[in-house]
Image (cartoon, rainbow, N blue to C red):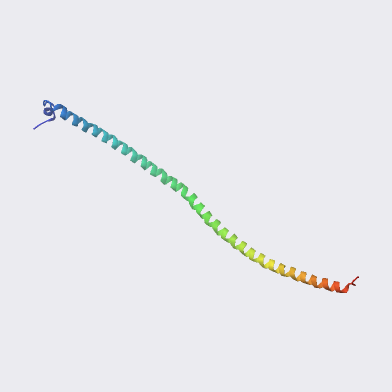
Length: 124
């Protein structure tokens, strides 16, 4: 059976074995560092998720209230649009009546003007 001590004592094989063993130790140390960093990242992610969850809980009522106010504003806007539309229809009807009255008054005025012209003596 060959042990680590026996391999180290081999002539000329010493450099060939020490380099790979050193590289394995370096890779192993690097892997441990990566694992530690990964644990740190996981912990930070868990903290971040918790914070986001808390903030979401804090802002949810505000968001729901804002959405309710938006819906209410849209409803009020629809009512105002309907009132304006009705107002314009009424205004149009009133303008038509006014127009008819003005035309009637002008026609009556013209008829009366002709009667007055016929009654006045015509001067040469």
